[in-house]
Length: 288
Image 1 (cartoon, rainbow, N blue to C red):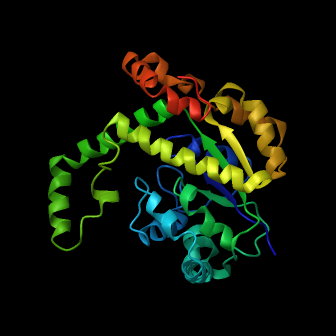
Image 2 (cartoon, rainbow, N blue to C red):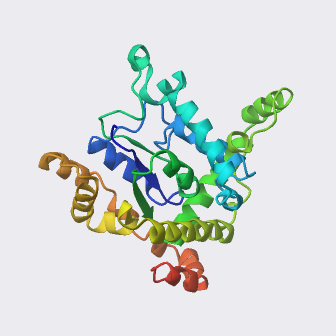
């Protein structure tokens, strides 16, 4: 038996990318082919497939929970994922240089894992395959998350309206269905209130996992990592049983962007919104 994976979970725009980069600096391999959010495309595609089984998606994930307690469904999904993990296509994680001697996910001795916010809902399926996986859960203030998400999605909408992209979209739609995840932004996150509601959904799921998993999961707050990076990185080292050189630890700490701490407080509109959702924020340990 090799080493079990380190799986990062948490709501989109909550610091999962920052955490993934910290792990990489600590020597944790997270895939050869990654997207702009530092997510392994290999595992992200599997997560999209799992969600699709229930007609769910990253911005509407709750439908997947309906299938969680269906043992036959879980067994079929487990069997298909294991087949995929053992297939030649695993080079999409390990890289083209590994093609001639592909490692196995089940007997590798390196520290490895992947980051994808979708893991927050697909995690039960991954634990069917990797029961000893170590889970890192990071959360962030809901108003900062909602604002970041709205900003990102509106930018995607704006890009989609660019004439060159519109022409490409029209051409593609003649041959393929329009895939919302790549052609259009999420309609669920174009408003602050809707994005905040999605944050609540992920936070409730995160709390549920914390209660179930005990010492197998480490709960980190984005704000704590920014405010006390050395302390939080030391916690990570202890939880993961990894030891990194002091100069590497200092480099990680230096690279953390502290000005993003509670960014919403610099915007009067966001401050007012935080007051309107203070009960929800308090529920998850945040003062508005």
